[in-house]
Image (cartoon, rainbow, N blue to C red; front, side, top):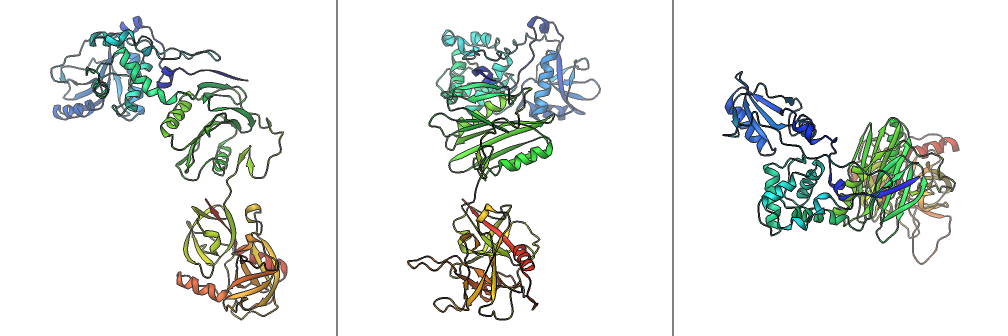
Length: 592
């Protein structure tokens, strides 16, 4: 069962949700401090206090009475001190060994100069953030900070500060997040309105023609949050709860709608002009299953090749980008269950996409359900689909063969034209070392050293007319995992126009065979199969051409490679000949 309810803008801007605590109870608690450092000299402690004060609020320095001087944050109520400690530790703003102190060892205060906060009472903390609405109910359409914007249009700074005190921690963090988005704030999102936040408020006021006070009025907060959330307008962002998949998350329901289940995916497909796609991901599994999903996702057409990838033992982040789309996937493994989501969005709309991904990540919740592996599998899957998603296919695939022990490959130049990426056997990246357009040959080098089971050995003795030959190649391009062997006859030692470097064959080849090795009955290479020539004249199907071994050796020499010479041996039977040909042959793929 799937249920939706509205996503409140106030919750959309919150980064941390705190447990509700009553104002009365907290205001009676003794103040505490977050001690972050201690130094053995006053000068060193003063310098460290100055450094921290540049990026944190509520920085204080105290004499510890033992010849040491401490740097602390506060004073806070105990619950708020725990929150400050956790947030600042998580963001790396304070040392991991920082701790909460009751201040009993603090003597005189040396920072800030002239301050004396010892014994100061803690002001009543802001009320806790409102709980999330129950599933199926409508959340508030706007944050409380905007509710009485008109009333606060003419607030004095004192009135604005008084209203500001009623904001929840989530709302205060939302203000900081919006200021950060606007380019005026670059410190921690902690909900503490210290000097850094006040300066950023003043900068925003100046940029928008308001009186510069460093305290936002109710109307100004509404204006700032309205600017921040305007980018999400029109998306129909709602919380979607899918009990089958066991996932609850924000989905842009005016852009995509539920389409079908095809495990491990729940498909949400476009409903308007925006070419977008959302997937919920849900399946049982372990680390190996997670790694397998990571590999499969990268074969999908919807995940472009370029972009950062990060995989750990408990999850992965996968981003792909090309000229038309950006795909972002976040997946985690917990308690034998793999869950996550993918968003595919058009390029050129990065601000909205980034905000949308943030809302999807923030709202993502794991529920008890897990997608049934048999759900929605009634339709027959095509070989080029995975769970209803198109697998990425190369633009063109041809054959090639290994010519040295490091994995260098000779292939037809047709295979490497206008490629953004070239692969060997679809697993290993390769680059073009040299290319001879006139001869129709290219030499490739893999990005990592390979260990071929066979390397081409070129025949020494001149080939015999009418002798049997065979071509090893991927006749059906990438449709089959192993090369085929096609048999024929050497018809002429020259091309149709007398070309010495060309050999004419009586052999019916297919386009995917081009670039494959032509071998004699002893398993030695006598040439490379060339693509069928185009033109006005259509040649008989059994007429093929090969670039001779001596021409290949010359081009290899110019690239700094030595052609290995074959030994004179007895003729091989068909089985051994096939094993030798297939062992040296490799699939060369050209990708857009």
